[in-house]
Length: 281
Image 1: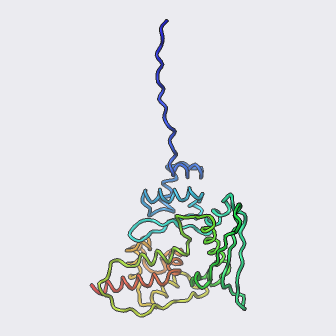
Image 2 (image 1 turned 30 degrees about the vertical axis):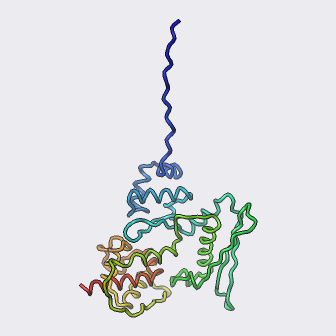
Image 3 (image 1 turned 90 degrees about the horizontal axis):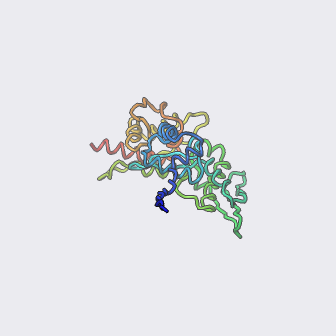
């Protein structure tokens, strides 16, 4: 009787799908097409490595960048900061399996202007809810939404912070809190040796009916800065896309104008640094 030797069968461990493939599957698109679209639209300035990190964050929290739930913002010296919109924060919150509701309570002055907003997040299995209070004086920006809808804006800010604390969301920031931080971090081109003292910046209040472009121009001109200074700062820090091709304030995209107006102090500091550096040459 002849015995036929058994042939060993090689087994291969199943490969783990890539982050891009996971997002493509979730959005029901081809991975190659998804990559090309992300690079051409919402993640234009991101390197391949930065795009991958953004995709990982989006997958972790089930966010859709094409719906502006997550987008990228350039940080100082390169790199990308993931920013989550209010729609993204709300989506992350309500999708948590242990989420059991959220309540908001405002403290108001005699004229019913908001002073603070407290969010109470109920989490299943916890004996005490998570309570977070945000104060208008610490959050308000000199923008149309904050001036016209302070209750809604303060509630949105409180929802983001309460969600973060209640469920430990990490790896991203909320739109308004990142605008100031990144702009301030991105303003200085190099460590100056000695700069003359500048007068305190003049804050320009929002005017009803005035376009963001006009508000930005007024802010810059009032503080002694030309469009060329803004363009040089925007090009150096990456905060003004295609700066060289912009002919004037009116050509700055509306969303960029609003972001810069939310961070007036950081913007003016950066413009002053660029102006002083040019005068020192």
